[in-house]
Image (tube, rainbow, N blue to C red):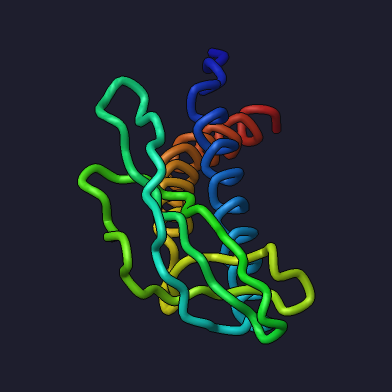
Length: 146
């Protein structure tokens, strides 16, 4: 009797592997920036509204900071929240690449980012769940072919 290929589990496994690879890439990219970055203090000068898809607007900080060259730069945070996570005038840490000061991030990377944790955890979970069904199917199929 021919058993049916578990396509849902195959797709789940591939998705899990892709999520895990994305988390690993993001982790290494963050660590690379961290290893070559300089740290300065910046000041939140504004909060910019961002649409949170169907919810009330979220607010991302706009931070002004100066590097060793004395030039004042501005960056906008990538994460918006409601209520705002920052206040106008608040001092924050800014990490930037001295070779490319426009590559700056608000805050430190003392731990794993939320993105790495979420994609890594989901990726590993999806891969294990999918492979737990795909591998026995492949083993059984190989046994039946002999």
